Image (cartoon, rainbow, N blue to C red; front, side):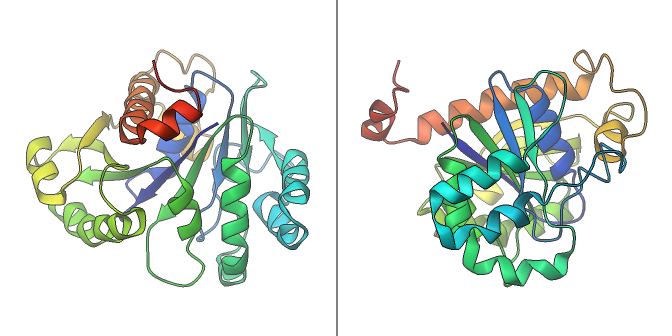
Length: 259
């Protein structure tokens, strides 16, 4: 199936909250993989520490030297359910950012394992930086990378070099798009011209729903009809369409994605 990645330019634009909203509204089986080198947030956030902590990504990384089969077997035992549907799972991230440098040798194998899963995978890669331990292999393996950011001058300025980093990594801008969070300080056309990549969708500042996803505060029932989740469903459709449009025709045909 397909691997999608989310990154941010920093400044807490809501990358993990957006990744959770996308995953919970995804139309088919999906795994949310916490690949942020700064550490995972779902166990302490959405689940408020009430879910037993699996080794998650770190457990998978330990199997990197034993090959893809061993890694996939370990991953199947490390994922946990996000909801009661049985089709939306997550792979918990690092518990300590000091573990990130040690992950560097394992990222290529992790990237191949994620892209080989029998379902879609959304990789929350967090803030994109140039330091050691960044999941660049995951981004390079992804069919599409969406940058989650606010439409402010500060965020646009921070996004510019990071879009350039992704463009160099992916060999162009076809596989890059933007998800804008909150009010429009700058217009979408202006942001697209400045950064050279399109705005795919916008996510509202839903003050009733975002705290549920980010910190486990509030009721998780009846989320589907809330503004953030409706926007996430539309954003997911936009991301998958952009990924199909960016995919070379011969590769799409090989994977059965041509209409």
